[in-house]
Length: 456
Ligand code: GLN
Image (cartoon, rainbow, N blue to C red; front, side, top):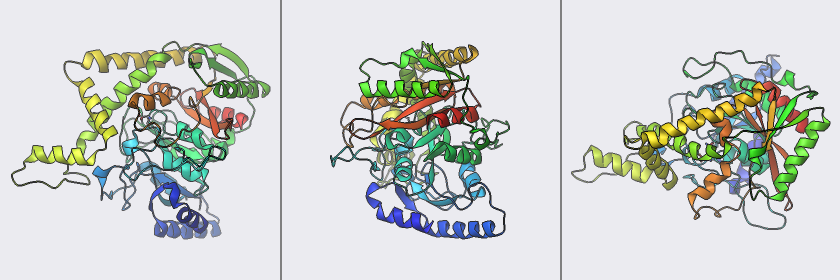
């Protein structure tokens, strides 16, 4: 823990940790020492980790990287961060992210962006660690902590994991409690671990999962021993290669990476089959209707009264001015854009044309997956991202749709509620990490982790 705290101080330039909690960390580390001495060490006893700023942590700033939550210190602890503490993990602090988890580059954060510890060859240009869990990815990749929590609504665990050469799994929707995690799009949000390798992911996911009566969508299912399922044996497993993910203009190195991953699984004894997920091309548009719709509703609670910040008001201002001024100065431009899109697609005149339509498309996407799983496919292999990490500032001034296109391989998994894992799979020509994604059957994270283990 002390070594991590020193490393964090020395790596301020990465801007990964936005609130450090050394007192809490040292106290928990001492408690962990005592448990180890007493021969009563739980699974993550004494392991120093970082917590994404989206998780409410008791008495510690929990701002979802937003100005509107300035000064907010929750009185309660999210279920997942509590479970990690119960498993003995030591919280070092809170990690940078995109504001309210909206973004793919960590550049919408009120704290400024986190930085990817990787560099492009001899080039000094700073790269994005990805987003929204950019601080988590940067911190794990730079060895500032052993692991970190992330959340994934449309790719926010898997894309930053791929951009920084680490492992990240989004479990089946309902596996981890959402209680105490600041809500973005409630029907898509899931927490998950971001770790150095698959074994760490299995151990940490184990601690994060489980039924929670405080989240009505949390599944009341037994959680298998994920680590015990890492046998590396995938003989006879059927791996689907979806043809719709072979996008036009896909860089050659992504194609090569995908082919290499396919070969590795085949060499390990898996059976490779071509599959079709015909509604894939509608996933991104459906996601960018559904996610903002839910966000606009979830973010209505930031009204200047209940949480965090209230704008300075002028003489004669009433409640409407208070809402308007608080939300105008508290939310950054991307969040405001999402609230406006969401409000628009939910409005009486457009609800059927956009929101309801997107929900129908979502059902079709889910059915695409159900069909291939019913045909015997055990897991699906795709690239995790359409490129390696891009330069910071590169997309900020561009059309926001350019940024949204980054999520093309990841959003289908959230729309269908499935587990998905990104694992490092090699380097591109400039020496930057690239990731592959495996998508599994619902509730079969153990199998999925084992398949990913074979790719390691
Ligand atoms: N990049 C996607 C978005 O901006 C996904 C974010 C996430 O998974 N939280 O919505």
